[in-house]
Image (cartoon, rainbow, N blue to C red; front, side, top):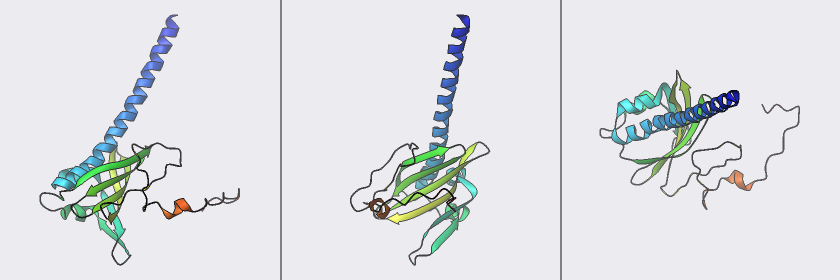
Length: 182
C-alpha cells in the first residue's frame, strides 16, 4: 500500500514538473518575442538586444525584388528615438527542443510588417537568430497551415484574397522510397 502511494506521488510530481517545464518554455519564448515587439515600439534598445542573438540577420525583398539583408546591430541602431510606435501581436509560435519559430505582426498607421522569426535556445536563453519579414497592407491576414501535426499557440485562418496559391494545387506525389528528399 505504501509503495502504491509513493508511486502515485512520484508520478504526480513528474507530471507537475513536465507541465511547469512546458509552461516556462512558453513563457520564455513569449518573453523574448515581447522584448522585440515592445522594445521596438518604444525604442528600448536594451530590450531589443536581449531579444536578438548578437549576429542575427534581418531579411526581406527590396522593391527591386532582391534579397535585402541587415545585421541586427544596424537595425537596433536605426530604431527611432521613442520607438516605432507600432501596435503588435504574436500571431503564433511553435517549438521543439532548442528551436522555435514565431509569426508576429507590427501595425503602423498606413501598413504593417509581418515577421517570421526563428529562435534558438542558446545557453539557456531564447534568442531570435533571424527575422524574415514583409511589409504589407493593413488588411492582409497571415495565411497558415498546420498539417504537420504540431500545435501552435494560435492560428489565423486564411481569408478570401490571401489564401496561398499552394492551397489550391494538388498535393505533390509522395517521394519514392529511394528518394531521400534532397
